[in-house]
Image (cartoon, rainbow, N blue to C red; front, side, top):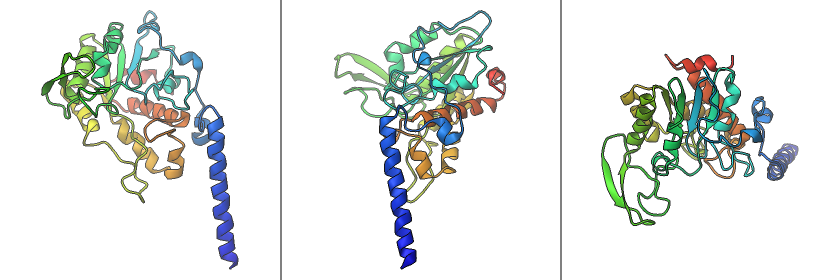
Length: 298
């Protein structure tokens, strides 16, 4: 009887602690900081919220690291106002900015296709110069309709196939290519500028292989695979960010993983974004024949 009573007390205490933490998270700027959970110093800084015009950080003799992607790379106004952060905000904390500068031009809601069709890529590309680097992560928004609503999907795969659709909102025709085609275009465009593209598979979602499993779902046969194939075909650096992060999450357990996301199973809290930025830096450090790793903080 005493053992049963003790179990009840422990269970109730854990429940109360969980509720308290959740309520606290609602009233604080971020759900939990990277320092709280990971022992990592927070690099959140409102001054980094706006990357400005592409190339605005250029200084003589100093390469620029341009970052493009979706809301998991730069969320909202990039100031944590919605408790969600992208890893691009914190990436500069792992770089010696006396050697290179960092510009995060990712934009929420964009896919590999719409980042191009909306003219966002042209603006970034116009500022890329020889010796620069471009980190490219897409995949989260490349599903859905080809021509209705937000119409941001790309065709599955990495082949050169395409299809022409009539856009619901404009009535105009648009040729839609495969996800791999768009990723290869980014790589080709950057190489043409004598700069270095680095393709990354997208970060994992807060989803598990089964209800009782602690193993995070990998994207090894979808967008992750197509990103890798695009990098292989263009002979450019590739970081399997999806797997690298998932491997870390598997060791943390479900309760800890929940604190790395905020609001849904895709967007990261400050702690999650810091973990992801750290993992990007670790991935760069392991690349062969990539001088960017020389600019990483020791």
